Length: 263
Image 1: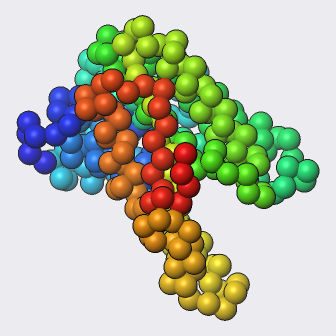
Image 2 (image 1 turned 180 degrees about the vertical axis):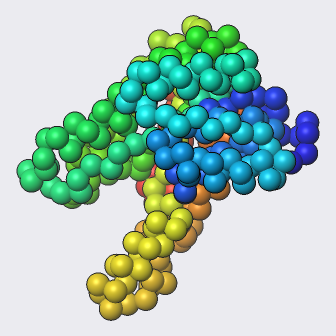
């Protein structure tokens, strides 16, 4: 990681919802672009693994185990970040809870409520807590949404409810916080070609007696580029929206899906 050459040189980037796929890629890309990265999620062991990778590559990381549904936990995330780095420039919200993938008529209301509590209310809790330090740095927020907001396919209703609410909240906050110099944008990926999806395609292949490669080809055939985006490609879009290159962009949603859907 070379100093002085990145989009986020000298910035402090907080990433909530660091998992083994997209969250990990966002942290790595932010570090590669020169940022000091704060990793937040409930599973400390996973955070430590990603942080070790960043540090080994010459980056700077800070691990803060956090449950974004808990006020005290989020307050600790803010306090620990400011105590260590003294500022916050970028907040990336990647945390979500996948609800039941059933038709709405057969979905348990508790599953919808739990998903909204993490995906929407939890994200709002983090944003509210970081608003003041972000305003001091003319910072930016990137919320990770989903292509589910672009379609109404069966069994995705509960997921669409949560992600649509996240989008509406993001747009409203862009208007409310714009006068304080804080930008808020969203990235909406479709399928992401990571280990989880590879496993899922393997299970689909077994069910229908075909190969995982055939499942991939059938799925990718619906996109213009005839392939599925990888985590780093989604992370690149996040870096752009977080960086000064997007300094005049707010309230926007950037679809990253290799042309599967057009908005």
